[in-house]
Image 1 (cartoon, rainbow, N blue to C red):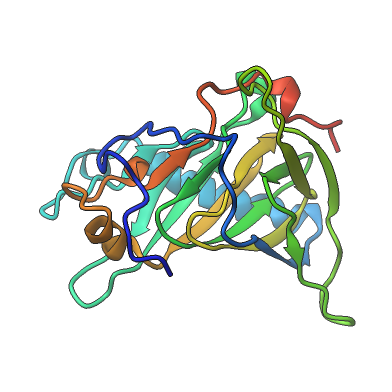
Image 2 (spheres, rainbow, N blue to C red; image 1 turned 30 degrees about the vertical axis):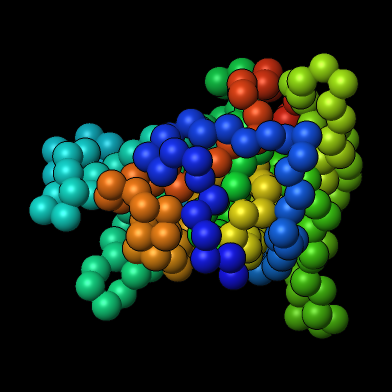
Length: 244
């Protein structure tokens, strides 16, 4: 692990690095976990999403607490709630994200990376997929007799790049009614875009306190732990698929 800060301006919530020269230091590892009948996946996903939505209308969750942490925040991919926060002697945190539907918003989230490693569990309900992108190929777990399915993968070109710049994008699709895990090493590119109304992420940030210290941030600033690789959010056509 490189102990040096990754950011130029520690508290910048929209810092953009050069996509033309960026090289992933590792690869994202994806593990299909299970597929459920729609009548089981839907209430599970809805229950997680409801928790995030309650947080976003809660005075306690939308204002800083005694540690300066605001639990309910907004990311490019959706609304977020810090379910479990770090504390002295425990530097990890956990988030829930209620995805926006790309087709409703008309724009995609950007390719980005984080100042610390991440573990995410992506969960979809009926008529919903999550398209995951990266600038490097995914490593997909396949344990014969255990791994329940293999997700669709394909490549295309990352959109909205500066003139003369071309970057191949690797894509993986989380199908409807599925749980899929992804291990994201520090500094590895990725993007998430949900197509459909029922998608959530349960995300563990094992280095939350370490990131804040290592990057010399002024405090817990969740968006400041993200570094973007493109300037603008592209139109929805660049991240949609045919509806499942």
